[in-house]
Image 1 (cartoon, chains in turn red, brown):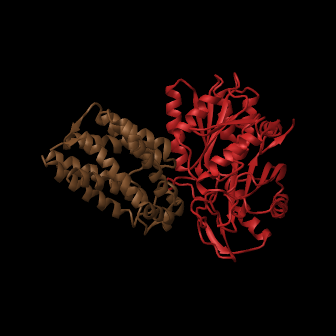
Image 2: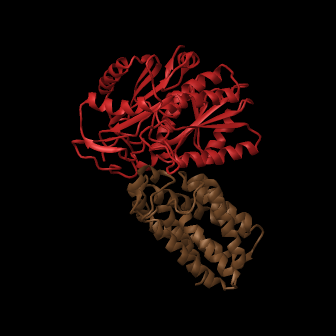
Image 3: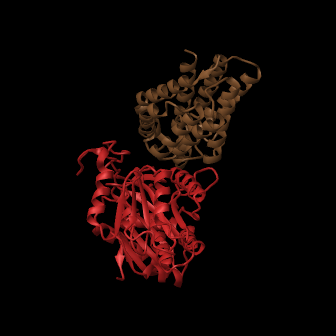
Length: 333
Length: 210
């Protein structure tokens, strides 16, 4: 393992300390329990938006704390859900009297910890509404699995729900935006390499030099299938077809098109994928209304990408364009 | 024969020792079908529990178990934190105010704990989870208590039933948690949560019948 770290067990805490130092104008960090909170929280009369999950996906979620996006993020250990006491502390810190939305990715651990925290927060008189993202078409959605994983849509839902909260929409309406983005969004990812968790010290799975994993999860969970490496055009096709057919996205739709890097893939390759994606969408008369290209939801040092499409209406378009000021996303101000 | 407060402390310490010793084995099981952190997460939680035990010296058994549960909830993370945390919190509620308990009381406490885990995790027997160990163990201990067995016999039967339940997870296809993403590929592997739950029951038997 070759990593830019001091001690494996200190990585998460040291990164949190650095976020507080680097972005003091946007956020503050507290410890025991560890939470990242918007600098001016709680904002009176505004719905608070809280998300969280295992560390190792940076900039998600802590990098999206700030005006127009998250009010707080709860970072767990690497790839491990945060704990209810963290989530409760974050919920209390951002409650401006208008209630708090918990935006939760569909992973068993995240769900259980957020549910326990919501129970505790309600006991303390805070209104909490939880919304779960489950946009990963690589997982068969059935009663026999834990259901589809929450992936790329989470970042986009955080942005648009954050804008809705900033407009002082009420709790139910902000939660509804999360649900709408999730219902209209689909994702799929692929890995060229495994990732290496600092404390494990070796790759999570073995992937030979000439093979790739299609439909991989953001913690290195295996995907739909493993196959010989193909060209970017062929890989993009493999990701796009299940996404397009699942919603389905239709001729005339306007979409937010998001090509996301998993941490170890350079931006230039993400643009090569974007070009292929745009070609496929043009061929189906689906309009790219807005786009996002970059590494926003990562799996440590994994090489690979994911594609997320969200069908936009005028309301979502306005919320996407609204100002945002966070370490990870910033525009309009 | 009853279980005293000091026996409960000894059980928790013994389980913490076992988890620490079996950490790599639990992680190996979890790497096969999950995300490879079950051993490390439980070890982190029970290391925190062990550090907290001295300050719980004056507490009754119920309060002690609840404090263990809260510590697990706030230190383990993942799915195991809320699930093991709930198990101990509910056992603590069932044994509130007690300085000792007998087999029927232990049966009721374990039942309350397992009911809490089922409510929280929404797993049923056969889903390839810790419930596959705990549910048959609770059944065995309840039957033993109903038949008027002594504590040692009840614990022996619970451990045996739990072990059989743990082994029954090997051919199962996971329907809950991260292993469920593997579908058919999860068959052929023993569930790590079912394994740690077996170690918990075995530690109780070993400590309380010494």
